[in-house]
Image (cartoon, rainbow, N blue to C red; front, side, top):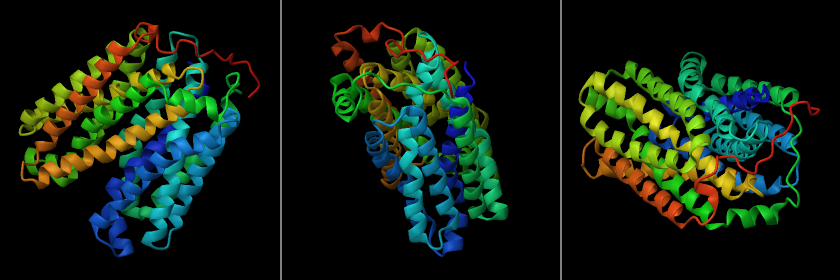
Length: 400
């Protein structure tokens, strides 16, 4: 794997840290800014809103910007957003800063996925994309716990200052390590929009919305399930979340080679496994050791869906893949918000703290049904080719 993927992974690490760390800092932010924890929870939604809006918008605006320059510009915006978060004087500006920090998220992963796939030869492209995503998963093992600890001891503002520094380091790595990646012939916004409107691309995005919502229906309430059902102390929650992140990393490592070998079967298998593990969690949540094992499995099979979904939309929009790849991250964040809302609705309805597991299983099953339907409707060779077919390789000797 080329060294340029390290620069993409560092960037993904910073993005993953700022996305998830707010969940652990909500009490600190609420106390400092004189608001309630539920109100502070809007900061999580604000970031997700930035991702959903920014992914297609910034990708469209940068349709003719060279990809390396676009990656650097997106990380610059990410850095500014986190610096603004650290300096926000009151709650309102902090909400706006979180939206700003979320804007480049989807566009970066969309452009980054295309760049990663073109840095390696055919047959290794899903592994390259999964390597970039490893930065996101490692953030959940190392970055988020460390940043949360930092925020608890030095104040939440220190956390976002450190993330801004990570953004600067990522920009330097992108400039130094990523080669120039030429755009496809006849590129541009019109071509990207036509590719995004393809039936298979839209079905892939819909699969992401429902399938990944199954993960966040449970992840959003994992801390509460751990303490209220499993019986762990609050001080053990970071360990539980780190185990989930460990599972995510294992899932990313496995998903790359499997997706290169068989894209659609990997997607079907991961969604089916996700539904099964969520049903299992409804039973194992009451036993500490079994719950911990299931949390790792949940992280693994949940994140195994991301690489095949990313490669699927990139392949189906292969002549103009950037907007489709970025929009996939809008779909993931809609899944985050929708899954959390449905899981919370089940708890509020009095169905119990483990009810989000069954809600998540139903959502994963819907995602699987959409994926299978898309496969049956597919009339080209997409279900049988390797994940990165038709995405050209960029030689590493090109001038960086």
